[in-house]
Length: 69
Image (cartoon, rainbow, N blue to C red):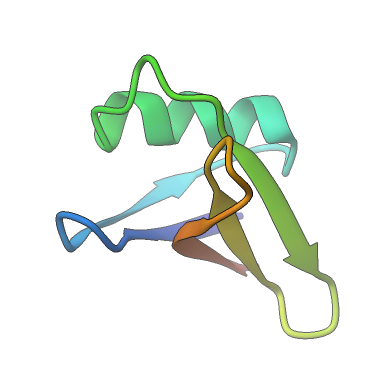
């Protein structure tokens, strides 16, 4: 599957191929590509729309992602 990422603060976006949609897989790609190595990240995901939010440690939305098959 292809996951499209967008981080709001620096307007950084990219897409990556993932084999599984897990928090650890998402976190790894965001930490490397988004250069956010020291930040605690969490995620919310809607299976109906295939979209999700990237949340910081204060539960604020700092970006989004979407999944394409």
